[in-house]
Length: 185
Length: 351
Image (spheres, chains in turn brown, blue):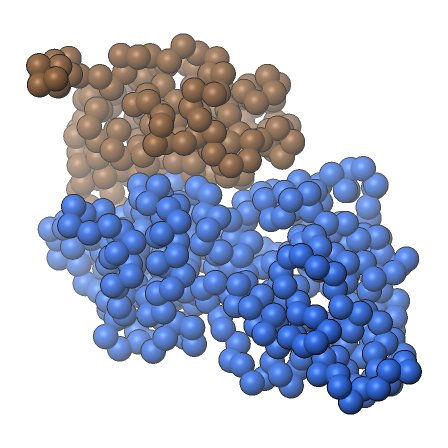
């Protein structure tokens, strides 16, 4: 299920499990095993590029590029399939990512906040739960209706939002790094 | 050249098959749109820290170059922008937190020699982006160009019988517009300004089954609301109409006959912070013993709505404010006839 919070999260006080800037999160944490058929499809449909190897993409514009140079929307779609219990900054998904996102959300749980109003064709059978109201929507009209009516203006604190899936405290943590920090302290 | 006297500038960038030919016609251009259209690639190409051979050319202004906005240890983003001169500064969404800081917004507002390309779909409330300056990148024949994000609903047609008018502002602007429209068109204002404007229009249509709504919002700073505005148009566009030349209520006031001659003394500033510029200008040219138009507070002086000196027993000799030679016995006709906002007289049934 796709869970959407209509509002903007304060990234200064949000935990590491809020993916504020996908480049920083993806580039530092992605794994070669994520580069499966789903990644191939995402890179093809969103970026019009071809995944040659787990770390290499062929872009019609930029030539051969490392995987970390794919678009933010593609990165987030790939990460969404491979990590759960984290919250995405939905503004990193362009309009063209939403049909794929709703398709993916039939299989995995995805949470995000969203400020802007995306414009896209709603896929058949796609559903989203609006965290603000608890409403389940199954069309763009219902989605936008809820966005207009239920959204929170201004900045929200991450901890004030009732995220429906348990936040994965271990996500993006590094035993090695954290252990060194502990020694210093 | 100062951007306040803004000319278009053209940024041309090539790296391999990645080609950009960007006409930049506003001080701040906001770039949104689909993923994978080359927004972040543009940022990377103008980033001097990434080692590559990028061809870059700027047409329309001498001595200008393009740079990526970076966060460095040596100076803050606000300091960098304050010192920046003759640059096209490209800011990617990974710096949105910086751009949303008040001191950075202030620095951008006061920088008169740089253009800014702000990438990202996040809120950009403090930047006062013009709705016409919101663009997306579109690749045509292998070249990426900036294309206006919005297709506007149709403009005002004199034959339309408006049922409602939704104005973004409360206070004086709402008061003036309500008096102008009289009983002909019902005037409502947004619940609390810009960010609730589209919701208010939507609620109005649903609640009152409004069939023709004139929307008056500050175009010069409505860029932050562009996606919800587009969603509103997609849903209810056939009920909605705009005045394309309505930049803000203060601009309208300045372009009425009351201030026409005074307004000409000032240059029309296009570009950044236009809304505030009009507010301050109106305040300046309207200063008189009868009252100054301030953005908030106080009541609207009668000069804006009631027949002034020629129609009353008061002498007009001391009046430095208002139209002394009005002939219509209708202040709104005196104010608007022959101006670019004359259509408002037809909408309100005064002509």
